Length: 294
Image 1: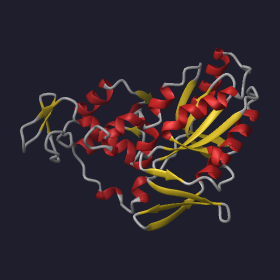
Image 2: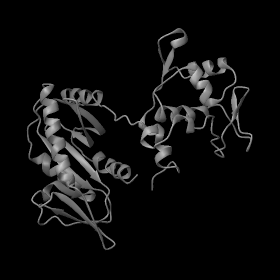
Image 3: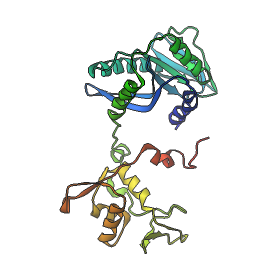
Image 4: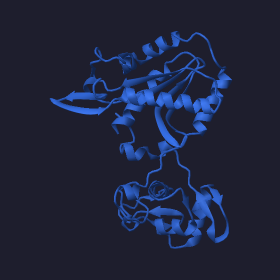
């Protein structure tokens, strides 16, 4: 949650970059099979900028002896991997990724941005102190970097093409949550949860889902059940599985709802499956139950 908030805080200052650019967030690429991930990537015709966001509060020190970041907060000292070293590695990986695809040799810069307003950076003795900035000075730093590169190395059309190649090569990390949490599929309760009172399970009646506890009725409550299935089990589903997870009694009702969503169909006959497609923002309710971030 803290990291997610930190990345969101980058949106406003990056929106104030007043020279031609494109911005990509949470990009995960593979270089010779090995993945690397970048919080934000600013693309301009003159240079690219990798930004690592840290939403860490407290007094921040960097140790050159063990390449660690130390945080002092409420009298306690915690140690973390050096984020500057991490973003330097991202730069190295992106340079090779671009070179392997014969993309224009645009210089790549890197920054670590501390987004928490309660951070106190102690960078005087840190050799790479120019690579760590607080959020309020991000735009100033970007302008400084921009002034170092006076010539465009690609057109905006070419830059857009580079952005598309990067975005299309995005390789989201797939996590087996059931295994990760030490659960079994038998422990996952079936049914449609009421959006009003969270009762499990709603029953189907006259093309709507009804809650026996609070009498709330909804035509789309089953979508949340599909999202849960997508995260926990698979991005593909067949009619019988949909019928089981929603506890529909009639198979033709399950067929009706899956086809109503206009999903991509894989295969045919008894082996026919539907491809579930959700975006990251479709799951904001899991990160912020209030549907808003402070």
